[in-house]
Image (cartoon, rainbow, N blue to C red; front, side, top):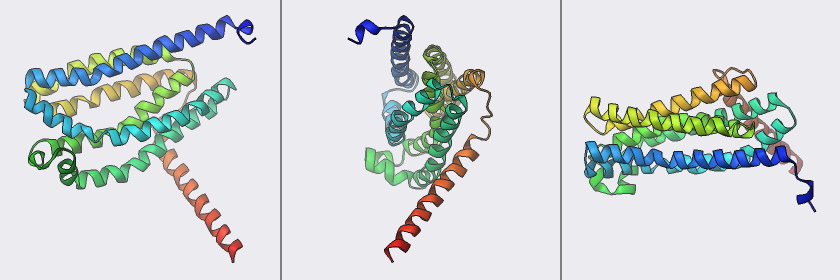
Length: 249
């Protein structure tokens, strides 16, 4: 019954979204492959094992990011479909700002207790290796992940999946060049950590340019906006809790 009510425009949008999203996901899977190839080629398998241990804890950032993405996408898409561009931008800034602010104390704790964390993951043999400082570098750089992820999510929500696909290819090229240069210039595995910053910055910049063409906004106040929004939500929770306590009395 619903098949007979098809709309060519909507079908084309779905097909475009599917093919570009698939292309983006396939390109993203190559990121780790490129890093592993450069490390193995220029520094050897021992360095690859050390880097893997240092980067493994980033899954603790990726898992909640994916959860926020799943819950954030419907809100962004619904606002876009209603033509409410201001709400699209507000939601994107909330997601970026709140998640980043929540990450900051976790990152600080992870930096301080990097040695026992690495010992727990990889074993005591990695505590006196570069894995500890690599972990500190990777976890600090991960503060850029929310901006990268949620700006990309916003592009998908406003029907710009092609931009994400092209952006992923550009990021892959930037990563390849920066990894080779990073290891060549530093002569050690830390070059990989430094190199990982450049694709993220590239992604954030490209995403901002296209989202800004959709609706003009300032990215500079995103983190401040997230902080105040989080503070407001926390105060509201305290107020509700106090009201509930008074009612019980």
